[in-house]
Length: 33
Image (cartoon, rainbow, N blue to C red; front, side, top):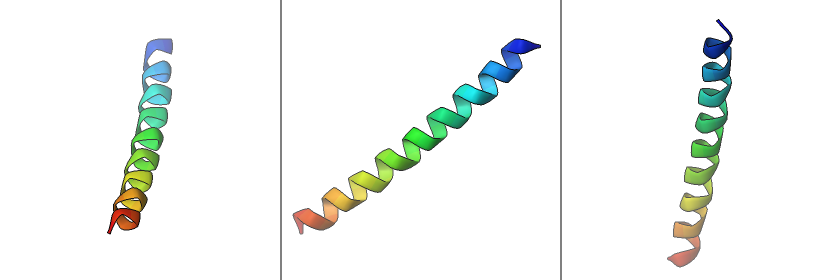
């Protein structure tokens, strides 16, 4: 059952990193204009 807990934690971290990456990517695009 611990595997499920680790999976949820990993998914949460991955989602947060993905959102931050997109946020900074959008900021870079705005600066490039």
